[in-house]
Image: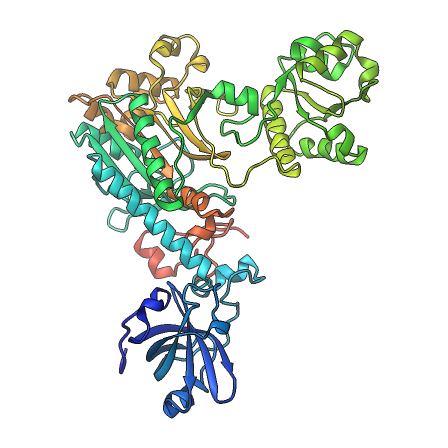
Length: 591
């Protein structure tokens, strides 16, 4: 700044500053020329203040004000005065005062922006991302960035108070198998070799426990080359926490206190502790999801035993192949849903892999259903009783393999919750989901793979099952779910060399490969590693939920699209031949 220097932020001025001479600096939000008076709305990150420029007070300031347009960057010197009663604007924090402008300096002019710098403007997300530096000027986006900053600071304050040390771990590390795809970085000085960008600091935080750090945290940048959706990004930030000499209860207790601290500080909400809990199997059986939205009821009900022997082949056939027949009760929808709407629900579950949707409408006199003729009275009565059916209810059922039944009914439940207005948008329902399966069988790879990661400890009483029934082993793992979204997850880790090697054996890593990929970790376990565990929360997702947004890109300064591209910079982009030669890479791309 040249001639005048800012003394106050726009949004911080109030009636207490009346009579003070101030200098504000920012962008012109709006200009209104009333002839002898020009009114300017000046905006910075704290808000907007009105400046009135009177030619009789300062002819030079008035002359400059005539040239101003939206988004010009200016500094304005003037005196704070109270507005007249009939001109008070209670919609603004500064609406009771204005500045009488005495001098104006233009720091930069601006062309007409390609997007409106205001909230609630009808601008496509493509344009918002292309001109992100303009989009970020909008008050709501400034608010989101400041909220994210406060969240980060609150995490640091809380963990520091509880004895944690913030330690940075490497961004250039070793490629490892399992999990999502790594982003690879070629090494110029080591031809033919690659670094990987970390999917998480997992191995390093375990090594920090072996190093005697005891309590570690990091607000860590992580990278995963995976298919994206609204709440995922190729590069993301997680609150990473690891502790020694703890069990699951210690970690859950600490992180409930952390969430309570964050929500009280940022939203003024006192969370009820402890949070609810359910096992993975309970979550799947009742909600069809390992991250259930518990803000409304409508639980899934198992009717397999009632209809397994029925003449309705869809039901009996699924049961004979080890499948499930389960359903949900859409209370009152039997009266309000048309046949066309019910058929639409059938199409909805078909898109999720189900073969169809069986239904019954319960009335005072009878049960209306296309499948009624295939079921005897005992089966019909059993279904209605088991599903809590009453007059006016719509009973919806899926018969298929367990995974399809869980997914289709779980998604249908959420869809009905939205349609029927059952979800309280102001509620924050936290839930711990525990005891996930440790392993699942990958039929394509013909081997077991880790549900979380290979370093998760099995539940102690299930360890002997590793040799006989690996698929039945439960993990000493836990996820924190908020309103149907996974906020974070963690586990008690394996800290014993022999057990870790056994896990690698089950996952199909022979000794040589395990040593090649994870030898440094196995070596560390030989020298006395304490029992330890931890958790990682998605900072982006947490900020999204606290800010009340539905898209994670709204709380990230410069996000990528669902194609992992940056519309503003044009990344990813081609590298020139010299750059490729220096890192010993030759492209072989076929059109």
